[in-house]
Image (cartoon, rainbow, N blue to C red):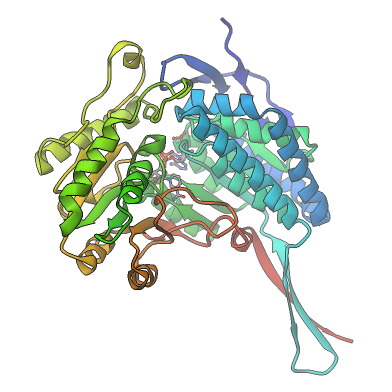
Length: 482
Ligand code: NAP
């Protein structure tokens, strides 16, 4: 069967499928989902030049008209909802219900920022001087490079594209090579919605080559990146040589603190959900459960029993809870950490193997794995694994749990399970993380409030909600005597 070849989108045109291509593989079955034209440094330069050329007209188009294009693109995505969600499951591996949830979120994000076109609030304050009118306007930044990871292949490109565009910027989007099709659908919807040529450009291909070309592209004014700390830190160093504005959302090692007074069953459910759904490949996933001593043994047993009931398999099949790792390299990383965990903490209480029975052998499936009695200095308690691996750790009491939770270079998300209001507030004020949940899983955020971490997890202004505008626009302050 002929596989479709998807093209790059530069200056309002789908560039012909010539030159090298790369395969987009289904991590559950090994099948080729589609092929993409492999973009080059030259394509990035052409895309950045097109974005530069489109900037004057797009940035001066009135903001509600820019928002209207986002509304129209949301409608197009809505009309292709099932196809876009199924493509996400096929290329990334998450279950179909999770993929549908993510496409819904991308549509909502387009609508939310479409509405922002009618607000884009600046500031208006009274002057100390008579008959002086003073205000600050939001102005776009210019050409923005967007680099996105594979784990939320639709939502993350959506939450960068939508605020960037509504503020009046033009963009070059470089999606993750492991899952470019979901981002392609967003760009295709914007194309169908009539976005003027050059405003959005899409170049898929190898991150090393394209990333360097992007950071060096003369028209570029800013970069928004989501991905690993290693690449983010490199980008930061390169971008600062040119004083590019930069926003980095990176790794985490997120804790869920479980106190003795918690609603026990909810705490178990929330921890298992946050640790294993989406195969633990959420940046906000729980990878450390820090449990108060008096409930530790009972909690561990219950988590293991709940984990035993999770069904692992192809996310296209009904009833599956956990899909595969996104690719072979990611699976091997996870298995390497599990081996490290065995040496450090002993045999896991459940899981710990690749699954190869029957059709599972064709994919990259790893059993949801729970290690017990993990201590803070162990590698599996300190490094991001990005897979279905949970480290359960014992804490003497609340204070000890807080100490363990904060004793980490990362600060993305954190959760507490408790019914004690004082401890909730202690946690809210003292936990060193950008996203906190209380009696909910550590993962599972919405788009209406700021998103992002602290410490080594993040750098620059937050994404999503009204905060997103702070990265994608700049103030121009005006003093006017009348
Ligand atoms: P990654 O390897 O850092 O890749 C992210 C993106 O960067 C991909 O598009 C990749 O392209 C590109 N890239 C690779 N090398 C580059 C270079 N030298 N210069 C510029 N771009 C380059 O991360 P990932 O494996 O896709 O995603 C997993 C990581 O993302 C985890 O650490 C996770 O915690 C983090 N994440 C964080 C958040 C958050 O909001 N904090 C959200 C989601 C994920 P290729 O795909 O072609 O290599």
